[in-house]
Image (cartoon, rainbow, N blue to C red; front, side, top):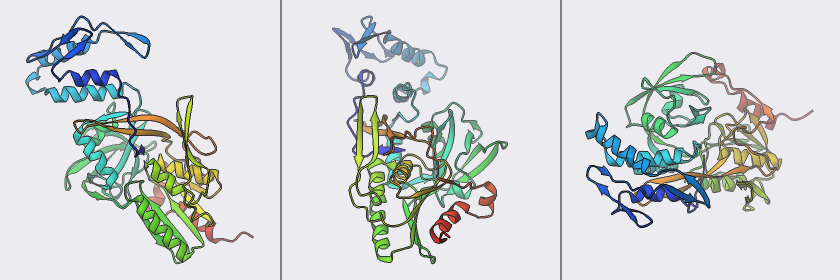
Length: 409
């Protein structure tokens, strides 16, 4: 996930305006007024053809009101159908019509939870999920959190949540089902590779994750483990850099495995600790516009031999950092192909506390490589098998240590 934390103002478009206006005093099409009634919504004959962007889309917007009224008047549980649920549901569908799983409308509660995630504090299982081939998929279980402790792995495909099928639901819907108060349980039915479905029971907990953990090993190697690019990442990175400049390790391991991403600017700041000048990443807005994000020039770590660890749980901001360090030959990549989340979302906060997350660009590495859906290939491929995990082995980390300590003959 890449979030542009400048929160660009996004033009929500004509349809958002119409949907919001339904609940005001009235909705106008030309000189015609459409009013909200107690039994439903009265619709107008004047809303036949709406011209957008200079091109005529031939449709009858009254169909929206027809569906609304039919649900309110005819559904078997019509007394349990709430106007707000219909309203927010229609906005969720509006965003989903973009056919982009990363463009989503979030109601006020979901928005609050989303910002809580970025602060690093929430209640749940401690895992990032996304969509892969139309199936809800685990991007990364966070280190030391309930999901990881229960055996959930990057790449696990979620087919059911508490016995209910997860096929065809959105990522937001899956998150709502998986989240819950500390101490409660959720059971995920997952398929891993070619294996048969497996039920994994996870006890939810309070999730607080410091986005960076560091270790100065006895062999003289400094390890920076980055679990996400959140609000605390810049400060924690500065502390790590200050320690490195004092202790002068023989090498650095930047561990970006199972890191689902976060803020774009934070990723640029991190890569800048190795890269003194030039673009870190480029945002491609359609065919005619490209914005480059340049190094801030710190480059405190440019002279330290560095290995970057990546796997299929390394996504978005992680891929920006890995791609930039690879292209500038500031690090060697070790591990497995990354997730392939190469798009940029911007957040538009809305008046009622809800928000719209919109994909505004694809990103490219400094060398011009598009990563979306493809991921980044490590220069040295090392697989981490299920057997390795069960035996508490880490051949990827061991390979990185070997590269930093074994002298060439």
